[in-house]
Length: 258
Image 1 (cartoon, rainbow, N blue to C red):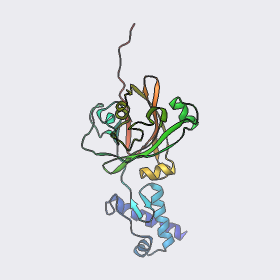
Image 2 (spheres, rainbow, N blue to C red):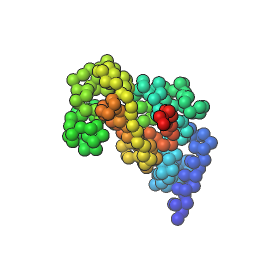
Image 3 (cartoon, rainbow, N blue to C red):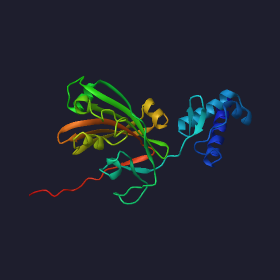
Image 4 (cartoon, rainbow, N blue to C red):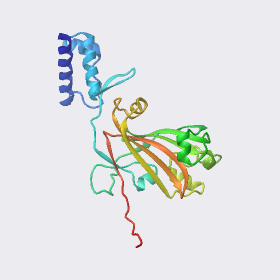
């Protein structure tokens, strides 16, 4: 019982020190041995206190580096409509203001995609309108905003669309790092619309690692497909940290006949 009370007391004091800013976001916590000496407890008690803070999402361990104070959740809004930024392959984010506005003071960086050629899984083939096991290019990459992970992306493109062209690999060629819209336009294909289906769920371990989240953190999972009229050109699974961003969609109201 004493050990339980001791680890809770250590955790409470560390929580207080984080709250007052003594340990700021991004700062490392002292080592387990240092915490044990500071609080006059055993190393197991110190480790239990750190585990409690990790479970609360206040700190996060980094393999081989230690335990660090996590960034505090923010409430930015990610615009998913046809913004100028999105057409350029960047994130359109805002912290406030009118629904159509975006903030321009942030910096979006698209990591170099890791691309491989393989067979389309059944679900992906259905989304792309191609036969099961049809050859596709699969690409995985991360988008960051001001140095923080903002979106994890996995995309698939049929080889019948981009294979053998200068833009077959999203991370290479004359339009490396450009948007899907720009790359398809380069080979004479005009994207006319996109669809997005959003699901709220918890992050997988791989997603949590990529997005710097605690396991089980909430995310918005977006299933997106780009079309040229009725022909799918690309489909992707996008994962956005729920604690950092809201998703905003602008839906134009077109006049109808009748």
